[in-house]
Amino acid sequence: MKKSIAGLMKEPGAREGFEFVMEDMPADEEYRILDPPRVSGEVVNAGNHLAVSAVVLTRIEGVCARCLDPVVYPMRIEFEDMFIRQGGAETESGESEFYPLTEDWLDLGQCAWEHIVSALPMQLLCAEDCPGLCPHCGADLKKGPCGCRVRETDPRLAVLARLGSEFV
Image: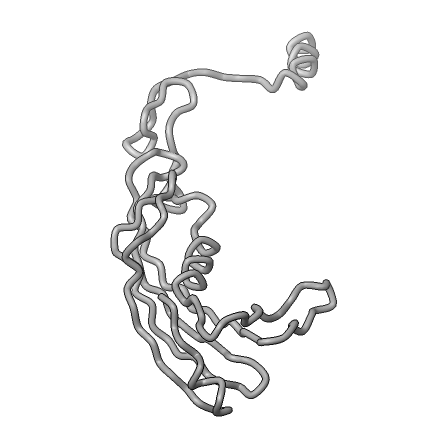
């Protein structure tokens, strides 16, 4: 969603609210967006820059990284961005603190999408303590132990295991 800022740029202190639903979402391999993201917030002319503050609400679906069960993950993302017409201030690390303003509009949809992507979890879990699947038989360990009696020794420690059995 693109928002015209021509009127905002003329008056320091001016505020304009916005609200929209992101309908056309890029496809993702790992996650499916269940609810189109709802974005609401405001743009403020802070004199030398425009400040955007917004909230994004959506739900995504993926699979648990441990047991492969489907997981629905609600997301609430709050963000603040700043846009400046010329250049931009830089932090000590050399990164820009501002987005450059090159047009008389802001692409708030792109801005929101960047925050959605950065807020996606590295891996979804159905529960923090999900035991996952047995690495030997593939049984779902949430349903109980699988019965596998595999005792593996780290190959780097096999020498120590042999030494221990010689002295017993």
